Length: 262
Image (cartoon, rainbow, N blue to C red; front, side):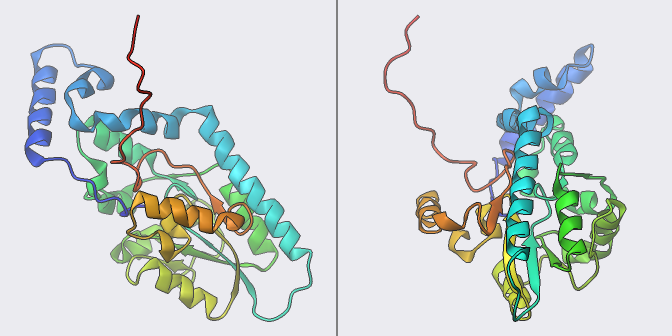
């Protein structure tokens, strides 16, 4: 998921930092990205992005999430089915596909990727990879006649490019009907699926992917909504980890008040 967090750094700060980076590169031997980013305002993203792209733990968590989804779907399919046909709804970015290469490219250029102004080109020409475990689950769902709806805030104008990307990754049920991109709010797109299907599972990397209860809310409101919907997590709502962007990006951290001593 993306475009939820509208976090912008001052343009003057970004320009100054990028000039500094350029000067460092021209002064002698090229600086390593980590050293150059020491003077970049968006360097704060580095730790989360490194975790998201390089840690073994993120791969384990992603596989764990999709394994849980598979267990839950097997349980659902073992029960008698009546009424509307079954469907699942899943987000794309950082849920099914990994876009971290774009984020690293922007970070190394001292560009704030949460301005989202580089995503259009990535949607057309980028080569995202699959999140571990995603394709196996989606193939299982498709093989058992469960409709799959990909609801994403990728640009509608890049619909053809996004479908080509998903097909190249071997994902099932990729067509105009099942790939619903930015236009109506996600809640409206979910409702359009629910009109003719019984949605038995939703998957995403941000809570806005699941319910309007989490859209454009304060973190305290989101905390309360998590508590109010606690029984759904791990049941029909499966959350994938994303440490690179989200509504939490500007949150104030809580600190131990005991002074630091040697």
